Length: 311
Image (cartoon, rainbow, N blue to C red; front, side, top):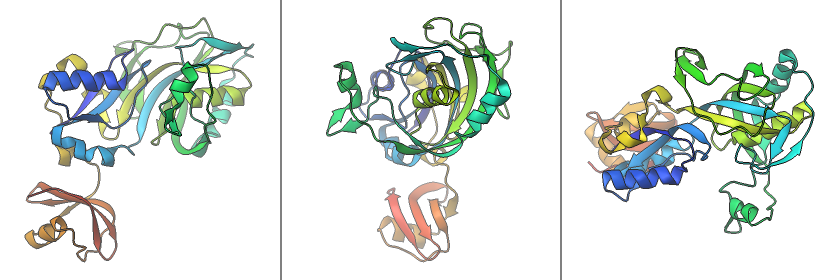
């Protein structure tokens, strides 16, 4: 234990955060449930020691973001790291027209990942090839964008809101709220402020590129804050410098699956790897006296153990 949601600072990689957590907690066993780019901030979920066993069950969690999309300039990295490679004039921004375009991005999509990404092709990381001046053909991958909402249009990134508060609908601009740190802008470009809820594997940098293309202009991701991963919300995260003493969540509380409270016999059978009869359908967590026994998949007739915990 435990599972800890950290507020990742700007300019640190997810691996940097993992390394600092290893040193702070004096353990080599630290993993995370989903990479956050160096120029993004917000929720990064860490699993420490034995809790690394639950990482596989949280990697598919949906995620919420605030995204600043700068129009009129694209970059080789698709974000504010740059440099700018293509520029173009941006016509007057019409909110209703933009919302109509955004609506076409919701639901299942095919998305081409960024060249500057950790995706491996033939054992080589795409970003390693890109930094050496090359390019790998990255096939489009299936992703799901659950919600994509326009919060406003602004003459530049500098003019767009940076201070927000959480609301039942997600984080929203609020002068009395929390101010986020964004990367240094790459000029003064018309900017869309978006609120997004996406499935696992979705690149917001690619989404910024694709939204710009749909609007007929080059674009890049000028700023990104991840405000939620699964049940972990930004307002409940700990600063990285407080990770040493963070209590976090235990494995059971970190898992979002429905629960089956087992008797002693059912728990024993699952720990033995058997497939006991049970009417549950879908993935469930099985507990015994409040303690984690197993993660299982049910087909309506039997339970198949995905992972079991010793009693």
